[in-house]
Amino acid sequence: MSVGVLLMTHESMGAALVSAARHVLGKLPLPLKFIELDAGADPDATLSVAAREARALDHGDGVLVLTDLYGATPCNVAHRLPSLGLHMHCVSGLNLPMLLRVLNYPEQSLDELAQTAASGGRGGIFIDHA
Image 1 (cartoon, rainbow, N blue to C red):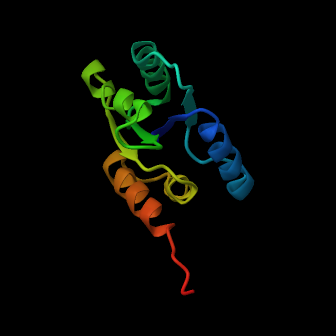
Image 2 (cartoon, helix red, strand yellow):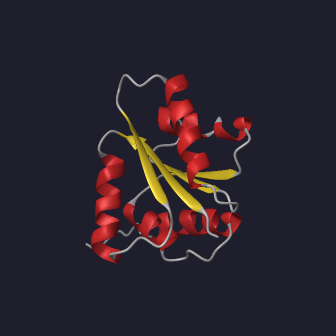
């Protein structure tokens, strides 16, 4: 079994990140879905969709939810999922290095993968020496 990965982002971001990950890795080694919220998204309706998708991804090892912006609607909805009985962690600040790092460690537990996501996201930020 493996951890499922659910991206919850603002519109167009989830599809772009998944497309880029497929370009880099070819086959995705973890079950992965994404939900994109537009500006007028109803948080309660989104919660229902997110719960359904997360349950479909959870094959016993839990779900890692990656959101793009802490405090925004995708993240706020994700933080409500555990109250529905879902075994998950949420990591915000989603970027491509974070997603690639997660997908490169499919053998990790949910707790380990959450830490890997955070370190991958931070590690992908670089300031040149100019």
